[in-house]
Length: 229
Image (tube, one colour):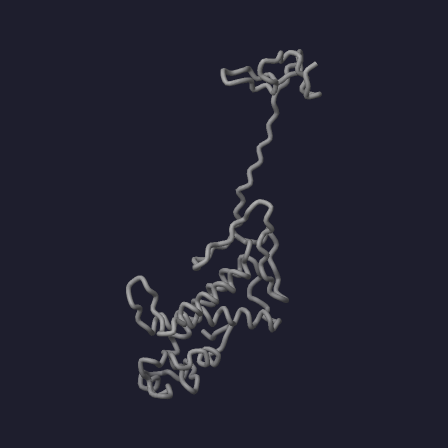
């Protein structure tokens, strides 16, 4: 499967000095046996040379994840008619793909520390890609397991504004999948005593529930005027 949001050349340039995709990018049709695959890499295949099929596999997985996130807000497939949108999505895809390739190719220092090259580029690329994707979904209640906490909605504080991809079609509220609504409204009516025009609830040992003040004669309380007659 060909890459949709970036190119092999862009990945190769960013991996220079770390991993090698080969001087000449080969096609799947040209890899018909292991020997041919080894000679296709320049220089000769080594620990720093990447299997192009692995690049395709990682690219498909990461680009599909980006589609999954953006499908909550945008109509897919993306048009990609704007240079801004094309380069923004491309940089996000490259960050995720490069981070995954480095994590596979390098060994971590422990079971809880992610594998990366000596410069820590794997985490840098992943973090940058995730932050950019978060900026496209800000305020939409989409959670990312990033190193910064998700913004919390607070009273009297404006909601975070997500960046809008130019020339892309946004979904309406009814078109968005799996919307969560926890706003519950309850409407009720308290009965009124027609004889005395006060709340009909009985008093308790802790005070009245009829709206009248303690120690007052509730028979003279007029609820409509909110005062005692």
